[in-house]
Image (cartoon, rainbow, N blue to C red; front, side, top):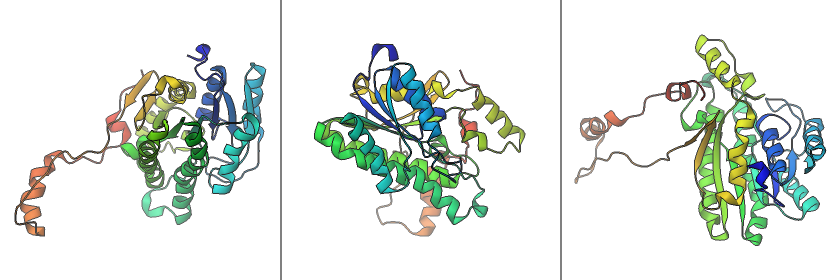
Length: 307
């Protein structure tokens, strides 16, 4: 795909692009002809520390040495003012912005009764608020030019479930709602918004504790899946090849691409006289419980080896 130049002259902002999935997307976007803003705060996987632009600058060097065009940015997505500077970097250097890839993130995994307020708030701020801040900064430009693409990174931790990640799951499922709202509100301006749930080995995944045989097997499977496997789907969604695709949730796993379903009613119950707690217990719940969803984890639903 990249050799076909599907992003020729398009300006792509990729957050968290100094390493892992973001880096792979930035490299492929540049190879496809895009002009890339490589954003990376330079912090640790848990969000601590900042100010090291070396990771972002290293990716820019890779792109320019290969004949591409890119600039580095070291601002945080987690504050509205700094998120605006990320998008402004695209405007200042390239005069426009055509796609925002909201990839930046942190992990602070804790079992829920041990999760601190800071653990919860930091993850929400970087993932959910950060996705909003950067998207909102780009939205007026997309509106004025009558086109643009938002790509937000969600996770099966929110779509399905995983242990010790209630903060991450809340943020990532919130991003799905954010993306759908953007897609609906901005469709009139030919603006698209989609989500990707990636399966890939990254610095964040490397923080998962392998304290059980099951978790160790999960991590071993993830190690087989390089971040470069996720990049083609992101570049497709950034390009005009996807001009009819919006409001969707995809997943990328090795050489597999999934389309996820979205919440819809599956059963209903009715009593003309209305409900009491007792009749709910006697009538409504027995009618519905065969369709209850068990507390599955991602590995319970997608348990086969990567293809």
